[in-house]
Amino acid sequence: MRRRKIIFGIEVVVLLLLAGVLFLYAWINKSMDKMHQNTLNSTEIVINSEVNTKSNLEAMSGTQVIALVGVDSRAKGSELADSMNSDTIILCCIDHDKDEIRMVSVMRDTWMNLAKNKNADYNFSKANAAYNQGGPERMLTMLNTNLDLALTDYVTVNFKALADAIDVLGGLDIEMTNAECIHANNYNQEVSKAQGVEYEAVVYDESQGDDYTEVHHVTGAQAVSYARIRKGGGDDAKRTSRQRIVINLMVEKIKKNPAKIPDILDAVMSNVSTSLSKSEILSIGTNAVTYTMGTSYAYPFELCYGQHVIDALGEDVVIPVTLEENVKELHEYLYPGIPYTVSSTVKEYSDYIANKSGYDEEKIESVLHQGPGSESETQVSGEQ
Image (cartoon, rainbow, N blue to C red):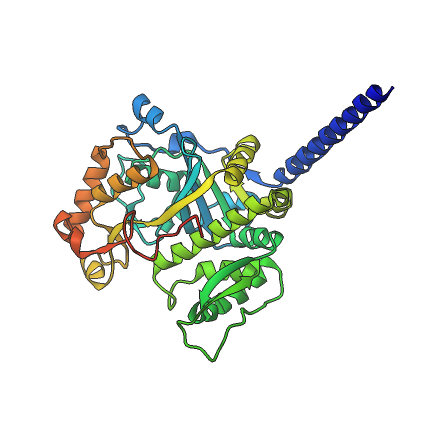
């Protein structure tokens, strides 16, 4: 009789656990129904021919790279796949061989060819304009053709989704200077309105100077405002660093409290557009909880911008010096240990940029370095 009671008790526990899992799955599934799943037109996504070979794709298969896009918009659902400038582009690298997640922010002003296919005339402009010119397909084509990638998936969110997710997590602790607090408060008036929350300023010590640093516990709107700081608070390289700091802190907080994931999905999914399926998102979410966060950087790694670039190109843009060397370094970072030679397309674009700007391989030592191995403050460690 005692044995039967024990067996019965185990059965009850198993049934309760199973019921809990099914309930959790149903809740997550219902939340994910709110997102807009966008079926991309694969014929409009271009991959350079040298990259799109069986051997190259197999070599890259251990690492999954997804384009994460943030748009400065109040649109949601299917409207997020419509044309608008992309405020943020991050290459999210999920390394299944090393159980690690790494990130590369593509600086929004990077000078890239935005042409819709290789037969079209050059259309060099700022990287953030590709999404506006042709939606996710044009953005993925830009990244593929200029960086020798084979991207076929993206996730787009507006800043309300990011702010709501941070609020579900209970806010973040971010080390900020007084100057960053001032700039964040300026942005926060607009962000709070878009999120639908009451404006709340980041309180800082006004008796200290602009460079005084302190850890602040911030809300979702305040964290997003911090991530948007650009002019007056550092250039776009520093801005992308702030964005990755926020994402790193979010992932670390989710790891400590994965029970928050269903609530996060419920809060943000109506403000998400993606080419990924539900099962793929759940798999990525699981990896985010279990994988370690590696270092992350801003691209280009070796770059130049300023009045000399404006004089040469007639545009205030960021140029890689050179594109060929930057793409080599990018591949070494995304796909470590895989021998790589740039495609003829990247070589062609690299020569074009060097000829137009005057910055060729001989000028590499005279420009800003912020890639792997550098001491630049744009590096973000996953161990923070």
